[in-house]
Length: 248
Image (tube, rainbow, N blue to C red; front, side):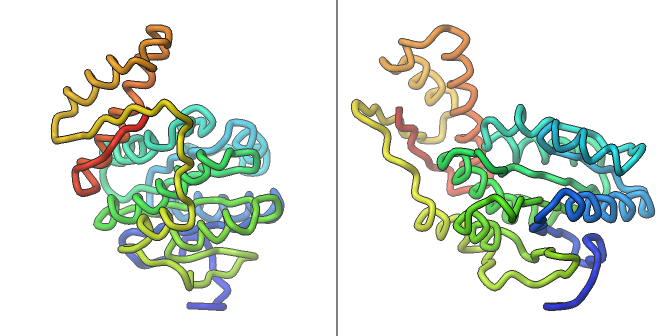
């Protein structure tokens, strides 16, 4: 397959997670158009999870489409919410489904980018048995080489310039651990309070809500933070070894 000229949708595997390295909007539009055309031909639903400005520009060239849309700048603010969102959407539609998901774009902070790459790695494990095709666009003209290397690590194949190649650095079993070495989480400034998940999400939510630093937030912000921690911890239970530590 390496070096073969092919389209974004000509893939036989049951679960497909492919990185699209585009260098201009024309390349992005062409790849998405082929992805949508394959979906129409197979009567498969499509979710477009893109920044709203990107989606509005793409629609000019794509014309009418029945794809669902999710504003990635909203749903992707907390990257740990992306996997549950995609899973819920796929479960609601049933059968084979397709997703275009651009979680990383120029201007994302280091912590956001690192967490989004972890999301990409977790997709490979959580959806390994799913009947789905996910296309992940990356702005190769403006993203740095480290981010693009992270994309290679977390995607089975890479579509670039209309040609598909197998990623030389992809490893579905080791990607999350390797990402932790390449993209370590930044240590928070002191003081730091730690809360260990020992199997009870209820207890963890209570401990976080009662944390001295969290108590300085407004009620709405405190609720948002507890919800975000709950989503991340839920992913650890569902797709990891069931353990995690929250540091505030």
